[in-house]
Image (cartoon, rainbow, N blue to C red):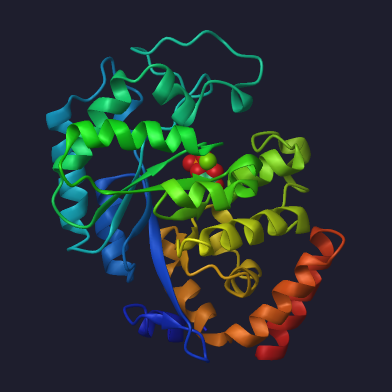
Length: 313
Ligand code: PEP
Ligand code: MG
């Protein structure tokens, strides 16, 4: 399986019945961008920009950010680059950005909330991103409602005549449930399954005591993903997945069956994920997804997916 996957790493991936699924990479540095291009990634589905902002005495200025984003875009050789705006909070403090301690940082002033509450960093980042040449798109973390997206659109409109496309991460249950409304203001959706699972299942993603049960294949999480795809489809918005589940072999056919058209995975998982797509058919994946949505727990979903993968060989 691995040899066959590596041999075809640079070919596009489609299901047996011809549904094209884009396989992108999650990146957190320039070196990873080079690795992703070599690994066959069709683009970057999530650039986590925190690497540029943490562990230093002062934030990067606009020029430094442009240089870094441009180098990553160039390393991808013209492939699409989806850059997530800064996603920090009380759990990832920066020395130049003092935050009062929070009892529940996962439920606190983080992601886009922080960006809008204290817009200096977000505005500089948007300015920098608007200057990068290539196929750059901007993605917002921790959205819960359209007004947040509209505020960023207004900021971008004040910065650039032709701003980059603007999408959102769907990683709160609120965003999944409001996907039809968010599709008016957002150009695309990408499921952040790590946080979406944390919030849907009420399990701290950093707590080892619940790690074994924090499973994105729980049917409640799958129903939120289905709602997101359906909401996006009302305005022809595509939905991808950039959380850890995109690289889970059992999740891949279920996500395809739910209507996901882009999977963003670590560079090391690109070739295998493409190979898994090629073994699937959209028609059978849809049946699997329907059964998974009706299952009564994550264990039942995993059993269904295991049987599916054995059957398709
Ligand atoms: C996620 O929440 O699934 C995600 C991709 O973002 P992060 O893991 O950086 O929070
Ligand atoms: Mg997240």
